[in-house]
Each structure stands twice: as structure tokens, then as C-alpha cells.
Length: 206
Image 1 (cartoon, helix red, strand yellow):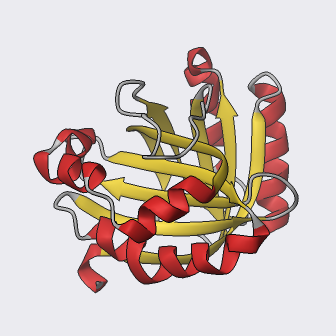
Image 2: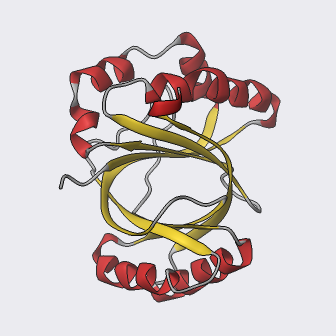
């Protein structure tokens, strides 16, 4: 089977523009992206605690969707509202990659994100397996970035993720926070963050 692809956008926004930023995501951008052939779903998450605040995850049927004519047209012809908000983004990171490993089923209302060095993929898979044994964690996956496709958003400052990503999802924030802390230590003091789900959109429901 072909591995799914995913686009990750992790960003912050000036509070002066936050209302319009959220309105744009909720009323235009999520639906616009899920309408592109090959896109499966989109989700927005809000960070629990300080740091880069907003996370958007877009799942596709395969990595090749990001190299398709339909996606290239959408990326090259952003709406005026999109361009305005791209320019307002701060500390922005955009990553396109392949779902290299998955475990569990479904999605959770809380998620933990761990950025780790790409050469620690074997250790990340071990952490994914351990996390699935914890109560309060229902699923997880590893996102392996594609450097050629992980280009900056139009008008937005370039940002580097500097590694691969382990995402764990579940129902209990303490369990995810503990798993993230353990994973962070096991993967060489990797960066980690905890999020709550804001909302999601499946292609079948748009």
C-alpha cells in the first residue's frame, strides 16, 4: 500500500491579527485545502502552554499529491486572504512528508508532538510502540519530511523543522505529556509540545 502524506504547518500569530487569522482558517483555508484532489482531512490544534501556538495537519492519500498539478496550482495561486495571513505568521514552520509508521486507530482530542533527529527513526518507532501501551493514548505516527517539498509559504518567513516528527494522540493530557517527556529524553532532548484539538474536517463531510 502507498504510504499517506501529510503537511504540517506550525506557527504563531501577532495577537492583534489573531481573530482574523482564526476566521481565515475556519471559514476559508481548511475547506479550500481539503477540496484539492488527494487531500483526505485537515485538523487544527492549539498548543497547551507557552510557545509556537497553532498547529495545522493536512493528510493526503500519498506524498505525490503535493507534486500534483492541482496542488501546485493551489499553492501558486493563493487567495488574497491567504497571502495576508501568511505574511502575518511568526516563527513559522512548514513540513511536507510521508507517514513512515502508524500505530493504533482513530484520533484524539489531545496530541503530543516530538521533533527528533531523522537518524533516530528506530528509537522513535520504539517510543511509538511504548506509547500505545499507555491508557489515554489511542494512536500515533511518524512523519518523515521531504526537504524538496517542505518549502516556505508564499510571503511567510522561512522556518526549518530540523528533524522528523512523532505525533501521539489520545484522550488524557497527563498521559500524553508523560509520553512526550519520555520520548524527548529517549530521542536526545528533542523538542516537544502538547496540543488540544480545535476542529477537523474530512473530505467526506465538506
